[in-house]
Image (tube, rainbow over all chains, first blue to last red; front, side):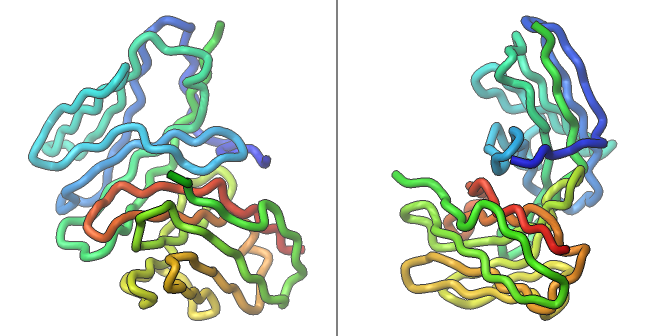
Length: 114
Length: 112
């Protein structure tokens, strides 16, 4: 499939190192945040989510941190593996939004060097 | 449990033509959303359907329209195609009230 994100910011890490991908969100009224991973030729795949009443949430090898004061979200990947190479998107949902509309950021490409 | 499936995977159209893209929701999901993803950008919300009615719309003109069927499958129709409509079109399904969306692999539309 066609490559996604040819001109995206890129983070290059060594296999086994930890990765931190940052995201600045736009709306202080957003109450839900989510990270997706997108590999070339595929749709976005859910990684982890967090609600605005939390500041940290952990999954398997991933942690999301939320700083509402500066409207900043980060995704930490422990012991990064070659299979983690992809484009990562953060997205936010506005509080009170009756639907499930997500507003996506521009994405970051993660490249893992063996 | 089946995931979200979209068809076709790739499509080439000419400016001014009309196109229909199709999506089958994940089993048990009652809400479907469509997103447009231009090259190098994040997905942008087009609209969402619940119980066969549109219940949310992004900043897209009326020539973008949709349908949701009783079996929760969905269509995205785009009339009078423009060159800037070239993009990856993503369908996502969910349960109403659950913000977590499950995406299909998309349809890559090229308008020449």
